[in-house]
Length: 190
Image 1 (tube, rainbow, N blue to C red):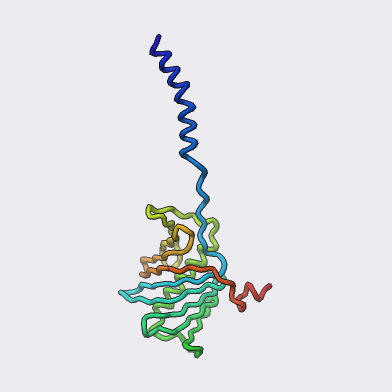
Image 2 (cartoon, one colour; image 1 turned 90 degrees about the horizontal axis):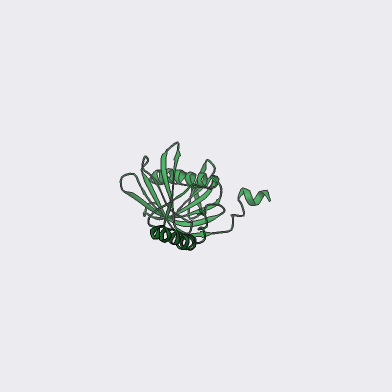
């Protein structure tokens, strides 16, 4: 009969300890991950596209479908600014407007796809992201141009977009929220 008493006493003392320790280990649930895609923002972007082509630029979002890309590299695109307003694209260089140069077409096409991905992700709420082992978060999506992976830093800022079918990768850094452009539809409607 002593083994039975031992088992009963062990259960009586161990059960509360288990619940106490498991409650402490769980802690408070982590806040849900929230990407920072809404509103106006700017970020440095590095493009890799085609067969080894690269470009560096500052990408600015003023509102949905209203973007600006100011190139700093390569030399053929340095100083070129592309403005995306819905389906319209304007190009300028030091204040002079012109049609999009042939050398900018591949980069322009990548930017159209990348900004569409960011705008689509902004519309999807909540965005079902998966945490990765390195602390980043990823979202896999699909557009008419192909499947893509949108990666976010742990703080919710965009880190990269990859679209293998095109192929291209855009890496982001220096993300910062900004005030909306005074000429944007959001501001003029107010």
